[in-house]
Length: 175
Image (tube, rainbow, N blue to C red; front, side):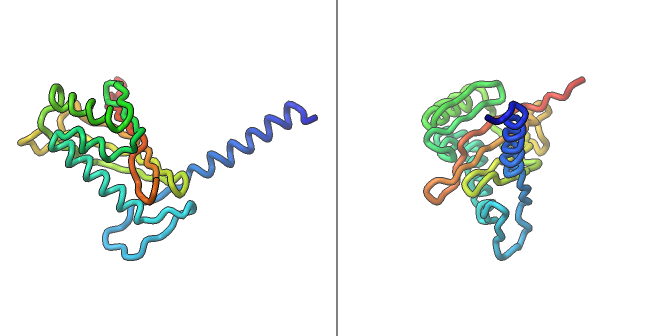
């Protein structure tokens, strides 16, 4: 029978292998790059192009204040955790919840993307962390209170990428 120490070593070793497999850095494609390349998990830069299209669809839906179009970038069972901690569940729930926010709380504005880090955790799983802000209609600069860090979990099903989960956290620096 293995000792407690042997069991702990086996668990630790397995954890390192699993976590190590998740840490595959992937840079955004360079403008004008012609042939997509694969990372260690077989994900291509074509996936990055799909992520960009989804990001743009979501930004366009936001600018139009269209909850259904915003939700269409998610899987049927997707999740959104909003900046205030509300948890919207399922594509339909996201559509209804976002439309409510657009109608009641979100003024006319656009999303500005400031930074993005993409990493692939497998051939059908990617994590995107973005820094964004909101630019109010008629303005050119980010609104002071709108800086956010967003985490997107992207999954590939039936040949296409969609958002599985999205968490939006307002940046609130410590004093």
